[in-house]
Every structure is written in structure tokens, then in C-alpha cells.
Image (cartoon, rainbow, N blue to C red; front, side, top):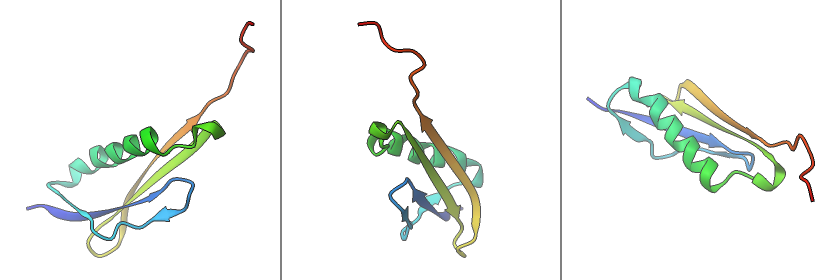
Length: 84
């Protein structure tokens, strides 16, 4: 039987609380779902002009208890000047 989990996202612009949740077949599927959410945010919402960003996804169960958290960090640093 599927269980409803809630995926709260913090991406540097504040926290977005998931009010709807998602039915997930097994808790074993949670890492994949968290990874999918982080990949979507990295593709569409990361502040690349700032050369860094952190996305955090907190997973809550139906009772509202935090049961896991995942994070993705992006950093970019030039190590040498490009030749002109």
C-alpha cells in the first residue's frame, strides 16, 4: 500500500512547504524521488549567476514528522584565467 509523503524544498529563496504530498509505494523509493526533485530544481531554478547554490529537500510522513533530508550543492570556481 502506498504512503503519502511530503517534500518540503528550500532552494535559497526560502522554504516551500508541500501541502499536497505524493503517494510513494515504498520508503525505499524516497531517495529516487528526492533526487528527481533536486535535479528538476538544479535544471530550472539554481542561481548559476551567483556561482553557488544549495537545494535541500526534507521528507515528512503523514504525521508531519521529518524522516529524511537530502541536499545538493552547486559551486563553480575558475581556477585559471582563460587565454585571450
